[in-house]
Length: 291
Image 1 (cartoon, one colour):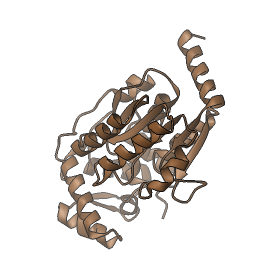
Image 2 (cartoon, rainbow, N blue to C red; image 1 turned 60 degrees about the vertical axis):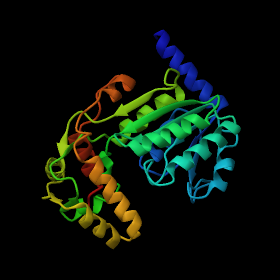
Image 3 (cartoon, rainbow, N blue to C red; image 1 turned 45 degrees about the vertical axis):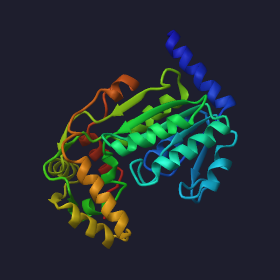
């Protein structure tokens, strides 16, 4: 056993015996994966959600304090997005409360290439006193096609989205969760910003081809304008203002400025990130796209 391996085991054991980790949005795409991994390590986990045993609701600040009480670390995944209106104020208030409760380590999920998200990151950082902060900035999740709003499009063979021919370095939510757990349970990540992507750039049309190959069914990408996508989101039940904001965010993020990959996953985990094709095969095998 190397010294590094021994130190990692000692850190994990200390977390397991002496600390409680709060996972906000504990039932979300990354949240439930972080909960599963921490639990497997023997860490005491407090999974926060609107309807769970530990009630936590980003829209109800009165739930934050009880969830933070007694926690030594926390994973912060803001809903609906760190670039959303109100996120800056929420991060400032949450950071102040976390510091008051003596939380010593925070890992924040952020969006790659989102200037408004950076403002929220800064607000959280400024509110913390003696708390380590690690920021994890992720590209678009591959799981948006199996667990998000685009899953229905996959099921019915058409994925409408305002992306045109822009390529995105899709990142697997499992890789995000693995990095988050490392940052929560091991030293050396305080103050770091980990920018995470998958290993390759794929357009939406190429994503549809990968999903078609994995499922054996024809799936195609349907390019739409931002306004058309907003109207589509309204038919799914979103409020018009939220639909317009989301469509605007997606259009901005998919203008080409994020069309590059990083080595963030490999630097933290010591392995390559998962390719989209692997995600698609796994999702198909798990029955995520069965009608």
